Structure formats: C-alpha cells, structure tokens
Image (spheres, rainbow, N blue to C red):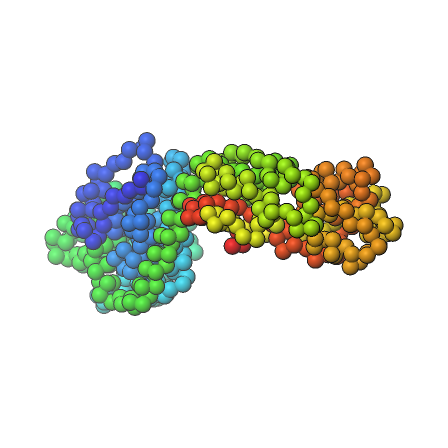
Length: 508
C-alpha cells in the first residue's frame, strides 16, 4: 500500500521543520519520493494500492491548496522535480508512478480550468512588497541577493522593473552567478567575500539550498542598518543577527504570514479545484484497478476457427499488458454444418451457445465473438462488456478467374449463408443461382477454387484478417449487417472489473 509521512507549516513551526530536516534520512533500498519545499517535508513510499486519502493529499499539495499561499504555482514544479529525482535514483513501483503522474495532471487541470492561481502572490512578489512597505528608496539602495535559482531571478526582474539600480548577486559558484547576472547587467560577488560586500549592503535577500546558516552576526558591520529577507529553508541567516538592533529580519514564515493577510481566494474557485481533485481520484482508482486486474491471467474462450483466434489476438493487441489464456470451443453451428442459415431453421445462439456456457459456468472469464454472431436476445446471465468498431464493413466477391459480379455468366452459382446477402445479390443479378454454403472462410474460398461454386460473397474484413486480400475480385455495393466486422466481448453480468479492463476503445 502507498503511504506518506508529512511535516508541514500547518502542524510545525519553521524551526521544528528545520530540526526535523537535519535529522531526516530514508532507506535508499526502499523506493520512495521525497518532496521538500519551503513549507513541507514529505516522503511517499510503498507499493500496491493507493488509498484515496493519500492521493487526495498529494493532489491538494500539487494544486497549491495546502500551501501557505493558496494556489501558488511553484509547488507543482517542486513535485515534478521530486518525482524525476526519485526516478533517476531507483526504479519506482507502478503505484508511485501513477500517483505522481496523476498529481501533475490534476495540478495542470486546476490551474487551467480555475482561477485559483490568479492573483496568488508568489514569494518573489511578497519580497518586493515587504521592501516597499519598509519605505526603502530602491533607486539608491544597494541590494545584494544571495543564491542562483528561479526565485532569485524573479526577484531581480521585479527589482529592475521597480527601477532599482544597485543590484548585486552573490553565489558560491561564480560561473552560475555570471550566467544569471549577465542578461540584467548586474555585478557578481563570491560568497566567500561576504564581509566585504555586506558592509555596503542596505537590503539583503538570501535564498540558497545550503544545509545551514551562511550569514552570521560576525559577518555584519555593527551599527549599519540592514533590511534582511531570508527566503531559504533551512534558514540562511542566523536570527542572532538581530541582537544588535540594527538589523530588521524577515524569515520565510514572516514573508508567508505577510502575504496571507493580503490574499483572498474566492470560495467557488477552491470548490472547483476540489471537484477536479475528487474526479481525478476516481480516475486514478479506476486506472489502478485496471493495472491490478491486467496482472491476472484472463481466461478467454472463442470458436476454433482461425478467424476467431485472429480476432482474439487483435483484441489483446489493444491491451498488451493483459495476460490471457485461450481455450477454443466448437460451437453448435460448427458441429452442424448441414443447418442452413438461409431458411431461418438455425437456432438464435447457433454460434455462441458453447461459449456462453463456458462463461456462465465459470470456465472462462470472457468470450470473444464476431459481433454479428451474437443472438438477438443474449442469455440473461450475460452482457456485452465491450464492442470494437470494424476497420472494414464491406462485402467482397471471391470468384473464379477474378470475374466481377456483372461479368459472371448467367446461372452462375454464388455461395452465401446470409439472407441479407442473398437479397442484395438478387437485386443486381436475379439471373444468378444463390447456393447456401457453410464452413470457415478458408473452406468457402476453397469451394470456389475447386469448382463447387462459381463465386462467393464474404466479409472483406474477414479476408483481410486471414491474409486473403488477393482473393477479392471486387468490393460489392451491398447493404451489410450493422455488426459486420465488429468484435464483441461478453462476460457474466456484474463483472464491472472486466468491463473497466476492456473499456478503452469500446463503443459501448
């Protein structure tokens, strides 16, 4: 079962989260996904079933509903990064894959289909708002930013838009700093020179991924006023810097508290997001049910003919992950070839009776049929759980010397077992003899070749499935059976698991 552990801003303080993170470790031999953001440290692990509450929690996190700033966008990228990082380290089980794939999909839907992220203030905007509220003259103030990442680049953009002229960037790796700084025309510093650049800094903004503090009390010039904003988790700036009274420090929790006071998210947008999440939970549950069911070997029954077996193969090409075992059976119609289909003497379940019994008695899970073989009234214990559209619904003429229908000599014998085909044929050629024939497609084609009949009418898709396209003399302009060429799957009533398993591509 998939599980998760979480500490977050709702149940812990910033200091408690830092302490937890410093002592955190996970078993590298156990497949898992570690999600670490400013607000939370979460570990998703396990295999098999995904409980709804686990999916709901991750979906809400990804959509920003659990963020300190509701609807914020950054968390979806952090979830994606955590998922990708986990995949690089180890092979994740199917459950974790599907959980995170679904979370990223629902996050995208919520931000596309609702207004929940519109007007949701980011950490970068909040930083600029705090600076403005402190009545700092940005045009003349020296602003030093520590860290190279998306957040600090956003802050640089906003500062430039606010006409800040004295902006500097510091980082441990100068190459990374130079690459980000060049487009904005700002100078860079090495982090190790911090005492040198801090003595002239009016505003300090730090957002690195360092494991501990990088700015301490002894790094600052006593008596020099400084506005410091620490956006890092764990914190970059030691709170002790405030002890001399010249430094005003905002940490991550302060920033988010400031922002939350100014945000109002409309209730209907949150409700829309929650509705999308619930829909996605149902969809994920159905996906996992299909995955678990597909790992079972499905017992399949079908008629003995080569065509029937090809249709089974065609069905399972749609579902390559489903294992199956086929047991063929000779149907009543296959056993009694002398029964004519042209004079209504054949029983309705002529081609399904034995297959129906196998499913009803539990010897098979499903039966695969040519859809037009199904009786008008299906056995009351059974139902059609899937029906797949035909790739060709036409009839073809097979004839000696490949003669077309209108070129057949008067009185030629044309074989068929269908009353509909007989009627269509006689509309065009009442001078021909209709001969009732039975047997598999290959046997019927052989009857033309050995001279028992002059021509044959047969479903085009049957010839194509058997690789007998070369036998087609012409495609006939006939009205055909509405189910011609379609493949039907039947099962006992109530087998919703099987219905879901074979639902993809079904037209019912």
